[in-house]
Length: 580
Image 1 (tube, rainbow, N blue to C red):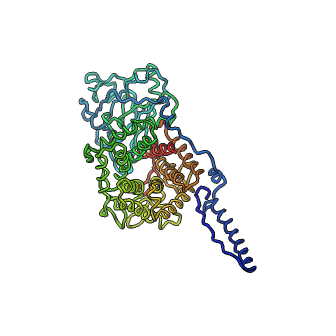
Image 2 (cartoon, rainbow, N blue to C red):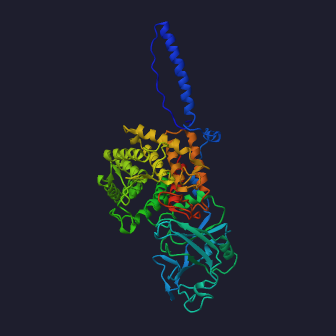
Image 3 (spheres, one colour):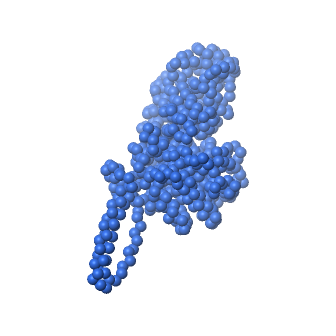
């Protein structure tokens, strides 16, 4: 393989004392030369046939130079506008104004339920006559719904000067709407989006309202919008600083990576959900390591201020689930804060996380996800790097050894029955499922690459076992690339490209080159993935993600919203590439 480094071995030589011995030596030498040519040939190709185009794509080329410092110094090309006015109105309480303080509850009125909608207005004075290139309304989901749930949200402009005293019948507590609920014609709307798989942290609706905002800035009356849903749904309220309703206005064509790096400082640090934010906090750590701006460290500390108190105890409001190892994924960023600031509260939080990883949480020698009693590849990305970094920081050899042991057992458990070495991402007692799920495989590959990057692991007696597994995975995964990315189900030709899985897999390749396992030309794999993933973002503040058929779920909807999984791991990939 041209992009995997080979280690050479010295051949011993013997002194030949007879003609027969010399002839024998020449015969052996001839055979060895033929074998060396065969090995050289095999090292230039993958085990399976590789197309000419794919072979050419890995020839030496200049790796991408992502100048993050220049990017964040660019003039910001977007404006974030929070609602200046919010009201919730309900058909079941026609004369009452409802609060949106805790959540924005919407309802399409299915069955015997009543319709409920929200009214939002945005003060556009911040635009200050700047040109409007594009505008999007971002709404974050705030609850978990039934399995395979879909929701459609529609945006309709309003024509009355409503107040926060509005209700279903009146727009200000006194004067009647033209039609009840402000719904003059429910068949007409400015924007609509259907999203799928409604769970607490994903997805979000990212709706194009460019024509409407251009009308308002062009002089049309701005009375805001009505937000309506086809069924019951709860959205994050305006009180949530970074996840409440936001109007995103682009004032120049988006440099998406520049916008992503700029917004990382202040736009993705709220709402301490579980693993979707791990990519985001890892990106904040890397941005600070690069010395891009003190604001990144401030954002990271602000994030954790909402998670732990001054004694390092986890706040109940943080909604962290301590029943499984997912939460350990926050350990490396807490360790970084402790080393950077010396604040004991971060060390206390780290020790709490380490105490969660006990033998009682294992099954057959592996940490399991408690709810489903399953082995999951998330372990590689969340708990294993934390164990390694904890062992290194606190000189705890037991934790470091445990990290290596868990990774090797995880690799064996997820791949040992697979002739193609394509991992199962969930393993139960009855067998493995989720084979080839891109994000799950990405967790395994990125986590393995990260583990191999620690100098202390490189000195471990079983390092070569880890490295060999990495090489085999790298070779296997290369075959499934399509357009620079990977499908949601790697082996399924009809599965759409998946941004979160592709970001994680690219992270795994990035570490492989850095660790000296892959040759420098393999940076092309990472760069092509980064470019392809970035094309899925409209602004740099959003990223859509596909949900392929996977496990016991059947995903048929194709109009998906943005997710923090997609955003977080894309941001982590960007900051890794910037650190070359």
